[in-house]
Length: 87
Image: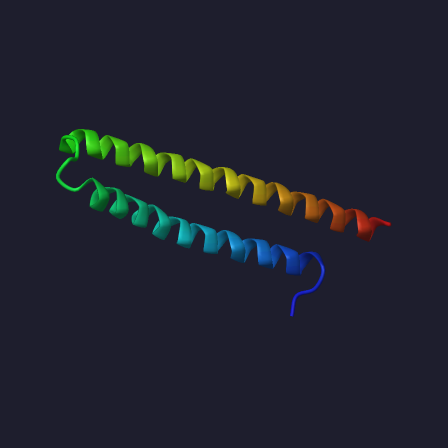
């Protein structure tokens, strides 16, 4: 069993993996829902693909920012652990 900083890092890593997995499923569900709701009154195929691509890019960028924040938290935790060992 993990304890201390290692436990927190294990939880953060697992949480990040879950976010990416469910984030992908979430994006797929949104794209599917948008297609279903628009039905026959959708714009041309090219416009729809552009809108979907923009939506997916925005979601990907949000997940990438979240990954950066998790990395920053891991760095902070490692630094604290190192300082504690030095004292």
